[in-house]
Length: 269
Image (tube, rainbow, N blue to C red):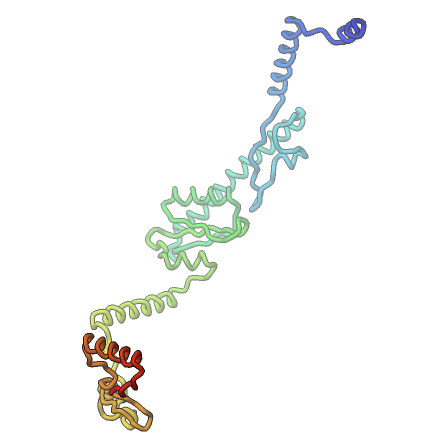
């Protein structure tokens, strides 16, 4: 037993000493510092026309922290510079279009082609600086477009709702709808002022059914009911018991005494 225990203890590794733990800690810190120096974070995507191009995808790399070679880092920097230059050029082009729109007195609104989110944000900023009004319309992100309006011709709520529904704005139809709405509102106000409408039937039901209920009202005709002996009808007054309690009890006692004595009971009225 002692030999078995000794062989097990001799095969076990010795616990690490204080020096070994310090060496492992320094090696782990050195590895982490080297990983931080060589890690590059992903950059935002660039705009190309009306669509976006992912920088990491163009480099053939996966998104997220990763190690890049000097050639890939140089290529990434070049793509970032191209992205910045494209944004500057797009902003200049939008500034020119907005300026031409302001100078054209015959235009009160302008609709742009569908753009991505970055391009729309740039255009909204240019329009705000120019002192105009802009709105984005469209359901899908790829189909959303921007419309700009001059301040003195700002769109109404009905016009904005029409654009949101994907419909063209027709001022004539909108004016007709507005007039119809005002007319309906005036009619409701006049009806409320007049109060409830009294309904009078075209004919009197009493005349129509006089051969059934007579000339009086139905309620009055019901009180004129007469006993019909043919059908055995008995007036209500004849059904009532007009005797007092004492008289009824005395009659019951008399019937009981006669029944006990065996005498024939007299007929009751």
